[in-house]
Image 1 (cartoon, rainbow, N blue to C red):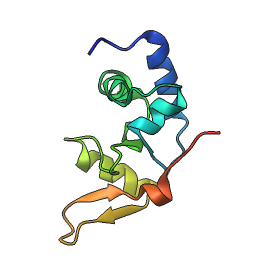
Image 2 (image 1 turned 90 degrees about the vertical axis):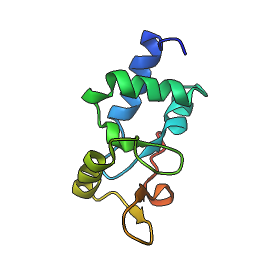
Image 3 (image 1 turned 135 degrees about the vertical axis):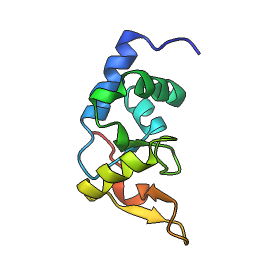
Image 4 (image 1 turned 45 degrees about the vertical axis):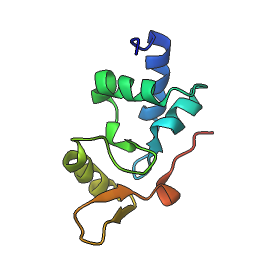
Length: 105
């Protein structure tokens, strides 16, 4: 996959920076909000440049956080009061996108 363009990077980071505390968007939600269908491109932007924005507020369509960032994301979600759903055994969680999804105007 080619490296995302500067305009795409800036647009994605602007959308992510505007997600309110306690809310979340999926990668495809972010892509759609910048007029794209490139959810994987959003993932690339977050991997390379997402450290300066609330990266934990961008989750997979299932509501699961980015792989290998579950623990750090959970700290943020708890601090912000983000609605979560837990597995029966209480070991796996995901964001409850039905309640937490942010859709920009």
